[in-house]
Length: 375
Length: 90
Image (cartoon, rainbow over all chains, first blue to last red):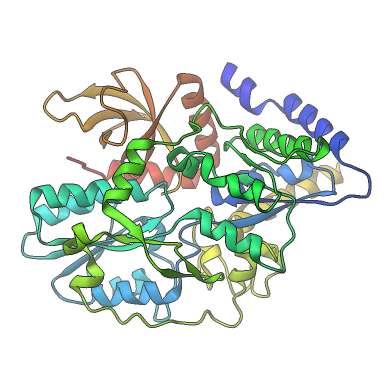
């Protein structure tokens, strides 16, 4: 097929790899962070690190929304779900995320009415169908999913659905990138920017990374060749002494983002003064809550939530993995006590989490390497 | 949830301009198109869908490439499709 040829051609990948290798200055080590969990997934699945010279290192960033949910928020959601009148809804990815007192699945087994939905609009439909119950949607995700929550809240308001509310855990990507740039234990040479988040926010919000921190960023697509191409673009900038925000994924990402989505967001959601990120700690202005106008649909106002901060288990090193300081396999419990079936940390839960991606594909890949070298 | 899945618009509803019927790998479901410009998509156009919402219009080549990629990742896409199948947006 033409499309396969266009995007996954092994020859093109090798040609790009050769160009990448040629751009590397001898003796210099390059460290690039892929912010988005979707990129991490592609990198491991296709063994892209094997195409790169040893001097180019990819580190995995905080762009997995499930991974950055602190345990206390899971506990808060479960506290709401334990009320007999409540049906708590969330995306499938949330079900196995461990809180301080078990996961949604555990709470469900113990009798709480927790249901998986594909879309916040499905939660809204449940609210219409069960006027005698309180339907709460646990909203998670970066700017990719936040506009969907915003549209849903507007619909609920328009329909006067008084039994619907949102437990809002939406986070924003820019403060997380800034926290990583300010972190003293991380030295990066550039970023692969998140493709889908950028569809909404566009490319302008990244400008400070180039202008204030002197690091290049290339918004990247999700195909293996997209990622190699973006790495090549980053290296070209460094080689030519440029430091800019570039858009490799322009076939999907408009430079200015999605203005309709941004306007809807601004109407329904506003920045919280601060929010805790798993592993990164409290970051100012990094998460969203409902605006005063839609306060009636805010589950945190409707129900008393414990709001207790729960420390991560001592053995869990998700924080270091999320900041890119540790590789997944360098974590003490990786693949032993912590696996996708029985995760201790969030990075092992979502398919976009660095640990789950590494666990699922890393082993397979190493195995195949052994087979090939044994021939 | 974070996977953007491509769908082809197969039907629009005159009385509900915020909804569209799409086909994703043979699964037909309603999605919300209210985050796109009014009139931006028509029947036969492709969109990238996140949690039941079209976030951007894409061309067919991009849609096919994205689909190929998603089919190659296996379980995560199967889960997303199953979730879409369970969805009844109205």
